Image 1 (cartoon, rainbow, N blue to C red):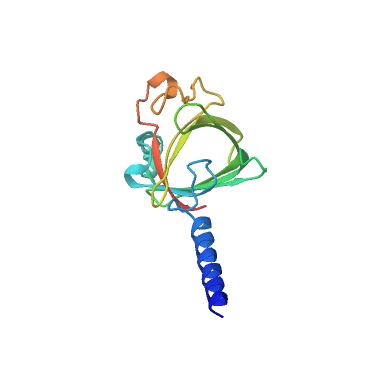
Image 2 (cartoon, rainbow, N blue to C red):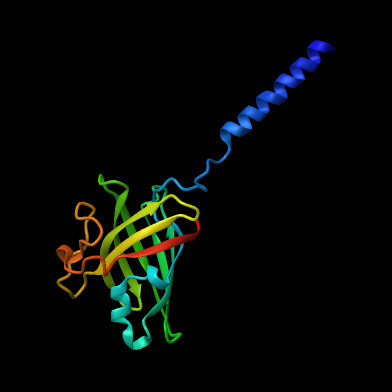
Length: 178
């Protein structure tokens, strides 16, 4: 009976060790990769350039962005954005995206093919920061019908149009959910 109790104790201890070893780590499921999830940018996190562009609408109050992967690689998917302006008007955007991990730090290149409210191509970069909640630095520029040059991982944040805008086109998001 004593050996049986030791065996049961050992099994319970082993099960506990396995549960602890297999539990989630402290990064809330984030491995600092990929843009998939629901994100919010508001207040001073909104890129100053957007407030200038939408000045007639009272600037931009907040931006809710949802990115969903549509393939097993997690590199492509669909997105929808709800932009709430200072005057309470709302602009909705949607389309598809492709992300590519660069060799520069944890920066990804992203191509956004917008289908609503108009068909456009946008390009840029983003980087996810493991925090609680996760945060993201994001810089994207409209390419269709412009002479804009997208920021690159090598150029870093603030590299839109070879740095002409500085950090005016850089915004920050916090992750609301994955």
